[in-house]
Length: 302
Image 1: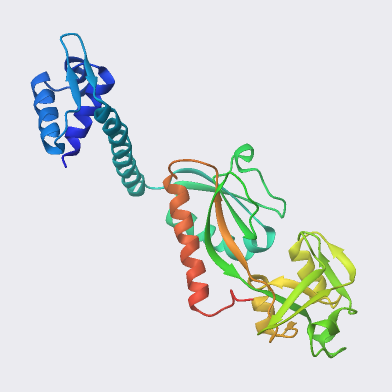
Image 2: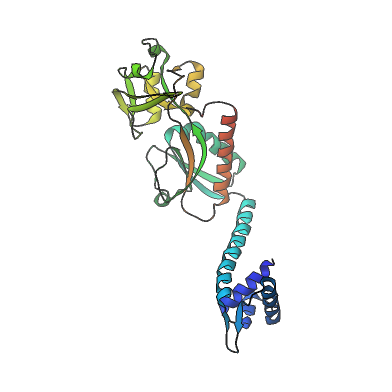
């Protein structure tokens, strides 16, 4: 199928005249008339009724016209996307992310992005409160956990695990054979979470739900890590935040044979048809970094 013929036909229907359609297209009336006639032969249906004053679409022509507009729009979108993909990132890229994941995972990608694309400036806003992307002027947000329904567009780029951890010295003060044994121990509650005290553990078909008793409550995840590291008690923290601490022996993973629910890592965007190159390039680099972590077996499982 010749897409030009679809464009000529759509122009005639929109203009109501071969002459006006030709003027809009910048070609001769004869070419438009000839191509539309060939289109009608291709589809084996009369699409237009020609009178001395005006051209009208038949019932089949009206239905076909609506489909033509969709096809032509998709073709135009495809060319626009290719043009944007070829462009270099410029301007200011505004990113929002949580304190914990932003510091541990997003900042290194931002540094690499700035080195690769020096013409693009980056503004990274870190915080555990959910930022309204439209009013905040953000190009993209990186959200960790479980997304609430919204009108925003989201893409899952990775997963993370959750570990019950405590300081190495604190771990020597108790013994726990199963999750219920943890309920009475000192616990640092992360108030940035929706449900900071209720935790569901699973091991095969066995599940246990434990309600912890908070001795300390903190509303920022990095501060929870600092309290746990200082020996304040147990807490549940994401794998990307405690990986190095566990490897260095500063923290201990409690009941590692029991799993806590894993969560998702998402890029979230304001509603838009296209993403500018600065956004697509940054997300590509972040996805590559996530894939490298997963392929290296460094967590991302709860």
